[in-house]
Amino acid sequence: MPSRARPRILDPDHRWYPRVLVAAVATVVTIAYGVILYGFSVLVTEQAAGGVFSATVLSGAFGGAVLVGGAASVAVGRVADRHGVRAVMGVGSLLAGGGLVGFAAARQPWQVLAVWWLVLGPATAMTFYEPAFVVIEQWFDRGSRNKAVATLTFLAGLAGPIFIPVTSWLVGALGWRQATMVLGVLLAAVGGATALLVIRPAPSVLARREGADAQPVPLRGVLASRRFLWFTAGTCLALLAFEAIIVHRVARFEAAGFAVATVAFWAAASGVASFPGRLVLPRMADRFRGTRLFVLVLVGMVIAAALAIGGRSDVELVGHFTVFGLVFGAAIPLRAVIMSDWYAGVGFGRLMGVQAAAIALSRAAGPTLTGALRDATGSYGPPMAVLTGVLVAAVACVLVAERAADPLARHPPARHPPGSPEAAPTSSPTTP
Image (cartoon, rainbow, N blue to C red; front, side, top):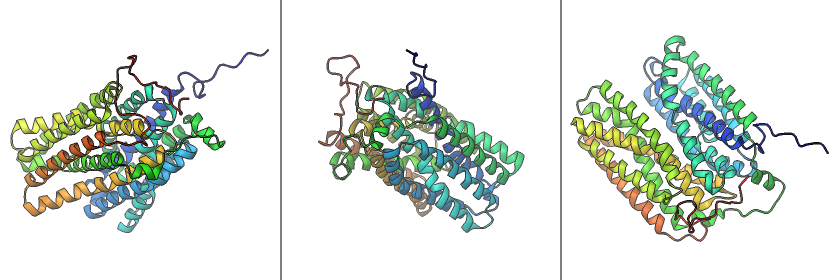
């Protein structure tokens, strides 16, 4: 009787494939975030596209893309639930690469807006964290899911440190149009090939295609549940404040009298400080409630925001960036951990997409409202005080969500140390 061939490392049956899968998804997300988000922060400068198009046009292009990407997340989640994420991330990488090439070729403001809104906006919904979290929910059981989320977000945290200097160097060496084309080709080639050649549909997705029975997440019921609504409200408030602080923090401390170089140094150090939180806190959710850890992150952000209200002393400067860095990186993975604990199963991608659409609105509103309040008051003190209050409100919302009953949630939010008599079993309907 012929012996069975040993599975190759890209075969889903290979014991190393889950690790390869996380690395592949992280590669796509890292390049997409690095090129589209962090690269854009260089491309808007006067030496690049900012010297050709106005700040209003470029800001409107990016802000519109955020909103369109959020709206597209619902449809992307539905496709990911039914067919898996392979084609979603692969086509998204090709679409994003083509959009960047179109941006490089744009000569008129309307062309910039069209490319970002109609092409790059939907592409972000297909290549950023949302589909990546769906991959992990589909492939990993409850016992290993948090580790996979932590690894993904840790690796994706390299996007800024890698692509900000790379983009800056390319702009200086080639000019911004050629640099943008190079980045677009990189994203399309590497991201597209990685997604299409490495990512495989999970067994649960293949079963759905064959019409096998599965328990769907009752979307309408979840959307009406107090737990989901309060948690989504808290997350939206938190990310409104996060986005506003990230966009305005350099200007805030510059206005307080610090040199831009000094503030930029501490901003970079803050990014490095986020890596331990990205890796450790999601894995701590194996032992502690994810909502409690999320509240801990938000309390840290309250402290960081409060230190920016005055922002005149060295202690406030260093304290703000240190605390911000230590907790910020864990916010996004903890959201995924909490949602997968409560609502893992068929329909998870669509549910995450609905939440992502609400988050996109808050992300777009935060920097805009903060800038408007700063202009109206002539100081960054009032908007930073308001953001501190917003974060306090976010803490309250998450605490209410934790206590809210929801019979539709898949698992209770309580955590126990693995191996203890109270520990929940680690099997799930989507275990490969």
